[in-house]
Amino acid sequence: MSTVVTPASAPRVGDLALRCNALQRYLGQGEGRVHVLKGVSFEARRGQVYAIVGPSGCGKSTLLYLLGLLDQPDGGEIEINGQPMSNRDDFARTAARGAHIGFVFQFHFLMLEFTALENVMMPMRKLGRLTPAAMEARARSLLDSVGLGAKTHRLGTQLSGGEQQRVAVARALANQPSIILADEPTGNLDVKNSALVFDLLTRLAKDNGQAVVLVTHNPEIAQRCDVTRPMRDGLFV
Image: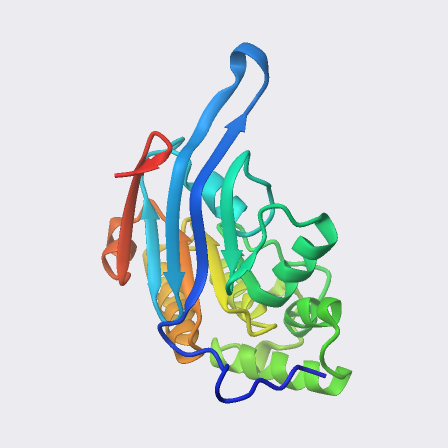
């Protein structure tokens, strides 16, 4: 069962969903040790779409992985919906990730031997908030919203690349997260499908009052975001 939130505390568009302060990250050992993030601070609010842009190797994806609680910083703070996360244990970070964060990557990472419906239901099964019937109903609704309502029982191998990425968008929204993190979500698609996936992702997230943070090399995608933050050499510029 999902938690009932009172109207006074219900999240609203414009509320702060994600904040980091002075993040530091080193990678490698010894002489090969590299200072990848050099004190990065950032915040994202519900209903807004943020683009992080910059050359390869500037720290964009490293920052996204830290914000998604997939890696831990060497210094600095991360807050998800006002809750500090930087020093939490793996169990708490995994729970927060499942409840509050949805991911869309350049490669869809679908389980190709499962249907579109089953792929979208997987995050819901892991979180365990809904009954099986409610999970299926939500998955069907999400697939319908990305234009795949007629292909719910298609295996991943029976979907085109653009369709697979649309399933990935639906999967990212499955648990109604407050934050969507996307790493080059259109980087593996042609121009038509890139525009379609971006439009779907941002429209659905805005409709649900979610913060979207995406890393992209595509200037046209970046220009269509609400906020663009350029990075260079481990810092925003």
